[in-house]
Length: 154
Image 1 (cartoon, helix red, strand yellow):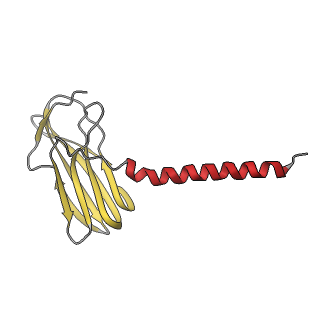
Image 2 (tube, one colour):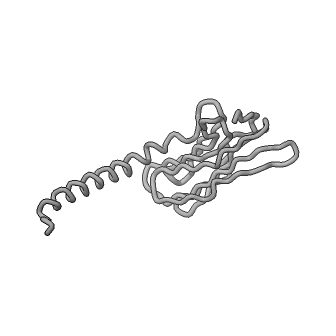
Image 3 (spheres, one colour):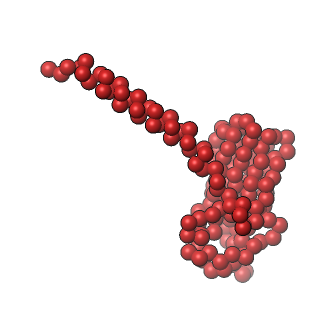
């Protein structure tokens, strides 16, 4: 026969530990994701989204292997229903190639999205973003006024 009195404290303890670890992961996740757009080197533009307490930082995202990647960080003073999309543009000499993050939606004060990494030959690049705050759409929001030369080393 199983003595449930001996199992109960261990299960409660294990449940409390798992719950505490899950709560810590949830609290840590927004901070860990914050440094997405690279403000050191690549062109970026920070937009105030008029009529809101939100800003959108648009530009290149630093990657470990040097792949070209575009992103947008949306930061607000309070929670809003946010939708964000980043699009990376590459001029191949005759036409623009594009890579999109797709639309990401959250009710939050911070949302960061980015495209997948792109490797290839030297080219002209820029990032464009579209952001919706509580139903009002802003964009296109460009990282810079003209494309910047970049040769992904990956």
